[in-house]
Amino acid sequence: MADATYIGRSGQQLGPYSAAQLAAMAAAGQILPGDLAWHQGMQGWEPANAVLSRLGLGGTASAPPLPAAALIIPSRTAPGAAAVADGAADRNLAAGLGKRWLASIIDSLILVCAYIAILVAFGFASAASGSRSVDALILLTLLAPLLYFTLTQGGAPMASVGKRAMDMIVVGSDGQPLGYLRAAVRYVLLVISSYLFPLLLVAFFTRRRQAVHDLVVGSVVLERASYDPQHWDYERIGKSPRGGGALFVIGVVVLVFFIGMLAAIAIPAYHDYTLRSRVQQAITLADPIKSGVTRHYSSSNAPLQYTDIGMSGPLAMPGDGGLITVNESGVITIMLGMPPLSGQSVRLTPVLSSTGISWSCASDDVKKKYLPLSCR
Image (cartoon, rainbow, N blue to C red; front, side, top):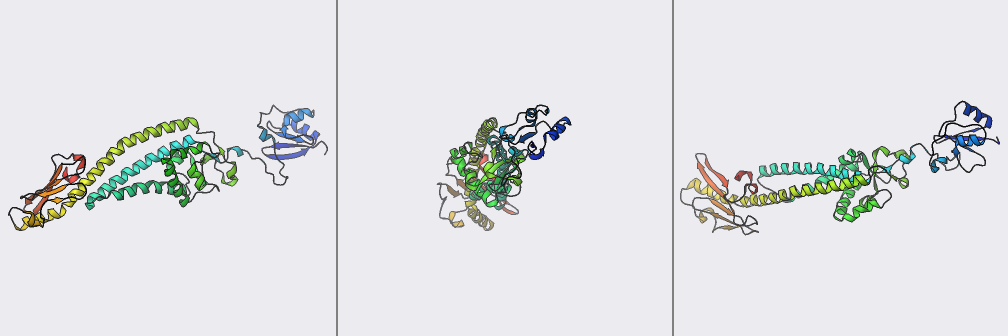
């Protein structure tokens, strides 16, 4: 038909229609606001009401203004062409940096709770076994966040608890879950980037808001609601208009405050724990001496001499210059050498009873927070 006109509606091409058919459709209200139209001689698609008016066929109610890109609907029959689907601009959007910072704060709070649980469990285990190992505690605190981010972001959930709370996911460049290995590598690189802070700022200048750890492993943080694996196109991922500058500023302020508060609590607590652990180690060194004193008084009431328990004199403790002495009554005095407890002491006293010998632990100058529970 020489006067054939096509109608574009919701990404679909309808027609062709003759002028008479279009006039009948317009009269019946079948030409909708927002419909597009094209006929031979036009350079591209235009609002249908404008085209019908030029043809003298009347029009519909005024169509809303549309972006230029939406006015071109490729023919579905054209080789290699695809129709623009509704909502395509809202698919697979990179999450805002502000939301990512807030998610990091939530995850940090969760990990702090995990650290507290580890410390409590470690304290009970150490008390039960009578020994303490700072190396084991450090290993646990390093593994906890690695396992947390690997398991939550590498598998089907594709998001840590913080990212879920902010409605985000982490996917690979193929639009699929990262997998546990890539998630673990991503976390390690994130830790390194955190120490080299400018590396985190790379996310401000990349099209998909990717920092160095994302670029290396091929990951991208998306708005969960926009995730559409059926129409995945890594090269066309856009930036979400949500979660921008304001959230970023709020996130930075809250994070700085949180880090300061955590440091104010954690650093003194760790210092106290370290000193308490060293005092416990010094007391543990006296265990063979306690056994010797117990054996001596189990068979004799004579005043105790160093030779009675296999010692030539006071025992110098390795490392910090501390000293362990024993008097004639079997009282063991542990003189501490580590700063700031240098010169202070812990006293172990044998207590005779009908059931045998037990030991009491006390100190006149060491603060209680540095003493194990058995000595307070």
